[in-house]
Amino acid sequence: MFLNDEKAILRELALQVAEIAANTRYDELRELWRGHNSLERTRVTTHIFAYLGDVGSAEGVPDNSLKCSDPFLRRIEFDLRLQLFRASFGDDQIIEPWLTVRPAYKAYGFGVSPVVEYTENGRSVHYLPSLLKCPDLSKLTPPDHIIDEETSNYQWNLLDGIFGDVLTVDRYRGPYATINAKGGDLGIMLGFDNLLTDMYDRPEYVKELISILCSGYKNIHEQAQRAGDFSLTCGDSQTMCYSRELPDPKPNSHGVKMDKLWGYLASQEMAGVSPAMTDEFSFVYDRELLKPFGLTAYGCCEDLTGKIGYLKNIPNLRRISVTPWADAAACAEQIGTDYILSWRPNPASHVSGDWDPKFIKDDVRSAMEKSRGCHVDVTLKDVLTVRGELWRLGEWVKIVNEVCSEF
Image 1 (cartoon, rainbow, N blue to C red):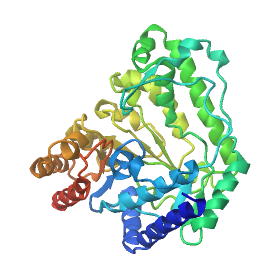
Image 2 (image 1 turned 135 degrees about the vertical axis):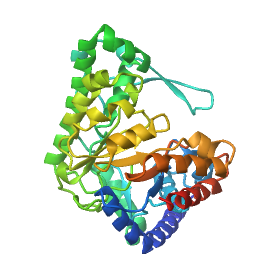
Image 3 (image 1 turned 90 degrees about the vertical axis):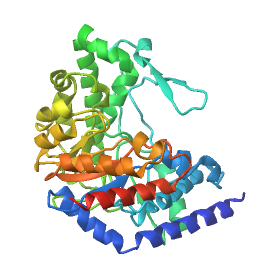
Image 4 (image 1 turned 45 degrees about the vertical axis):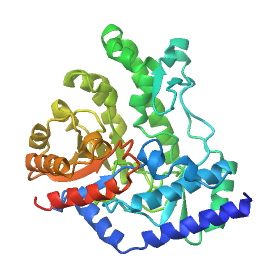
């Protein structure tokens, strides 16, 4: 395919995204999220995650649906088609009138490459301890925030020329990694199984490694802030980053400080660790990483039921995840109205297995009963398949909204 044909494909997709984003419904949703995230009494909000690596690329925008052959343009095509896929759910996520495009970076990581084993179909991976090849922590190299300006500007300018007049190209300049990389890097370097025993067998070594990682993330974030590279699209809350306290997301608004942004962290690698030990090996460091941000969100798929007391020491904490493995009633009692209870139903039983609307209704109703009186939103994430039946996602939203309207 000729390059001009690929540009025409991207422009047509950008026009479709821009048309959807212009719907006044999104203005109403922005106001809904501002109120909800500021602990005002609103209806229950819904949000379905769809990204590269889950249902977003597995079934929503599979690789064989892409038409561009140029690697960079193909990535942008995926991003645009993913926006159209997300818009089809009918949930409360906002399709913005811009496309955020990350830069090319010149510096990554700590000088230790992951050691990965892949399954035959490539859907699952096994990380082997990468520090076995470099056990001396003094040899780790702290990362720097260095953007390849020439490559990045070429790519941004190229997209501006293709569709910038109809859909804003948001030139993302934030760090290559968020602070939430800590848990993943820790497990990749030590091995997720080894981490659990290392905390007992050599706790000082583990703490030294965590300190090195945290210093690295703080360093690249401080470098980015000094360079004026943070913009209002750099926040992360695992949902819509709108609130009364912080400025709305806005493309190409570089020069903002971290205290105008949402910060996000999780500790999935500590899922099987006691609350006190999680505080010792994770929360103590997390509090420092989250301190610069205006508002913060915590939790992904780990059960935080017994750890919420420690979480309350995190500065500016606003959102706490309640996963399928958590005790929803116990979490709701601790969260109360001081934070948002972000309930995460099990995608396997809701949309990935046999389609069972009654089960979904009963499960949602049970969770809403247990969290009655809290500021609740429902996030469906880590959906790996809907068995090719994409209609399930829209139907799921309708079912959840119907049940939640009772509360």
